Image (cartoon, rainbow, N blue to C red; front, side, top):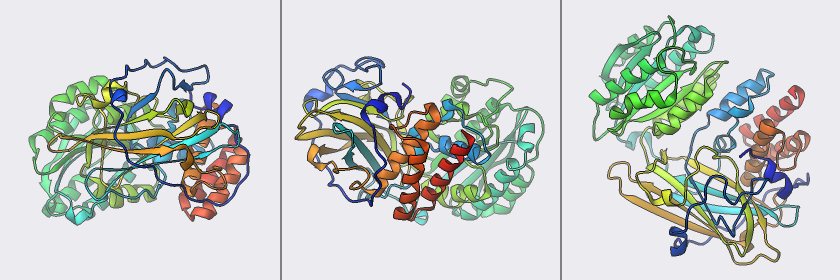
Length: 486
């Protein structure tokens, strides 16, 4: 379902900026027993022509968690170069998840669940935010890691800012990893070559030598690289360590199997040993769909880097701190109260939707979430007249990375908890999320919460000052760039 069409009717927002405020957290409650056994709607059942689902027929929304941010990273580069991003590459949830949220962290290894929202000028419209947060970890306290880097050295990587960026990032990462970590390096072009079998970080100079050997040559047989990388990860698998394959590529596969399903089928035996995947995209021309699908279906996440500064952030700050996992196969389920909410629409997560029954089917794939990660989902709501009482309940279910034991955490939101106005009373971070999602929607189909680029830019500029966040300031610049490009 294309984001934005259904939101137009419900979210006719006016440009009435103001400082952010606060809203009460929802109270914790158990999932209603009747909601657990309710039949699942099909992908199209109960959705009107504008994409909203009638709560009388589709009370429950279920989706797999996703911490990818590649869609935002690549679109940002595209706009900065004066090009309009391809609509198919715009995934609003990845845009929102690229921004800081400031949710409180849980005391343990599970999730904290936050639900808030705000009313909209349309009268019966509201936006609801479901925020899920894991606890961060100190790099010195994390378990050791086995990291297998699978590096694309095909001809297309010769473009400035591709292989040289990758080599610089790898060398910086080697300085950040701990003595108990081990690294393997696989290069691929027409075929794959193991440049370094699993090597302890005590032999950093050997690993630096392998990085120096990376040189551009030949075609892009991404399949061969993935197979060789997973074989290396499997041979060196350590039960007490975090085992991860990290693919660095422009995703422009042109030899061997080029479909993500075929590639993952080739490595599923090795991946079954609990080897997770991180895809790191580079390059002006980028195979977004292949890299995103590999990550989503390979128990991992997808990011994109286009500058040394972004590479430094990923490889020297984020990756060392988030190597290990907090949760496997994490899913969210939101149960709406049909006496309070007339209809709803989830923004994004188009390829992460699940049926109601799949929420507690632990054989069904979810998302893999690391320490300190936040996941945000926005819902556009149409409220019933005089809405009172519990509005919705959000539950997250996940499995322990080691034992596979399942756990759940829930929080509810009442209609009275909604901030009176999204632009004058809602928390600043919620306002930022609305602007980010609306901008993504505008780039995808030019229908964005009823707002135009000029109004979005005004809100982004105000929020950049309110939040003192350089990413929000950059967002305002990108919106202005889109105005000139469009």
